[in-house]
Length: 471
Image (cartoon, rainbow, N blue to C red; front, side):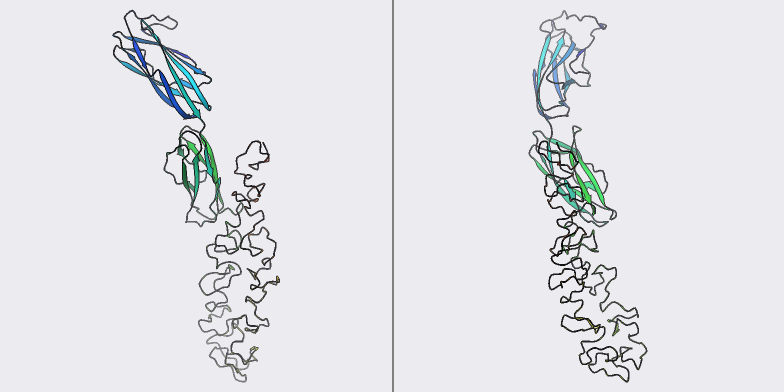
């Protein structure tokens, strides 16, 4: 129903349809203000304003009708407050009206008060205001918190700028997933041109991929475009973000500790209580690990941790040429010329070099230190994975033939070409830096103005939001 209505109030017991009569007694009144300039307000906001009518005469004044005239719109309306029928001599009454603009622009209207005053019974109040749609720039439009362990929290900041001409009152910042939370004390007013930084927090309860959407709710009930949040999101992630320690391995792939660049597949296992090479076993091949399962480590006296029959306290076989009980004496009938605990009969391939014997550590020295028939394996000089490159020649993982210099990068969460970046140029990478990879729905990963989180721009010939439709 249009707000351009007459509200007529029956006065002094007059029934509906009965003509009102001007009072015989002398009455006079004033109205304030006679011009109400409401300034600039947000489209959709409800702005109340007051018109005061004062009875300056001695007789009772009856307010017979209130007429509201909207010009070029339907934005002035009476409030729900009761309008008095009569005003005693010397008293006043406040009439409350609302300005509720629904479109941008300048608005002009009139309020006409009709009374039973004996002379000059009507008054006109001019009303004007300007309405502007609240606008706010929010960036980035996508926040990827990366990998976050359960029980910990990650915080990223979103910048919001009021690009309109009116203040914006943020009353709520809801997110549709409870693991994400906006850290802003509300309500919060943002003046025109003002920039604020809003922290958002991600607190996962497990390692399950999480996504969510946040919107900005304003005091007038409007919703501003929000942002997309994600964490532990390997299915849509950019490779470099999910290789946080920069060791060339992604937590989405096979890196078992993406906080430590010394821990990754192919790393050298050392005696530190950590699974350095991410193979599921801790400290294997080190002096503190019982590699042969005989109950003793090298630190505990096992002189050959590759042979379960050899350890401290074992029974000495007097004819096998091996120091079975690790007492430093080789059985009778065999000669341990270099005193390393092994004779030639027991597998010592260099009986006059105490640094060479079964179970010795292999060094990059051109010798078969451990007498296994292979020279320098496991060192920087040897191509352990057979891909044509040693670690000395730039192979960043010499246990994986898929990784070496000049390899073509593929989408496998590995740094295939050893350039320090994971999956660049593939569907896993966010090549244009807009927060979306091709795997995450970016239909043009060479253009930051095209991604699922980008607003559609009419007339630019692009499918900005990747919904398959261009405007």
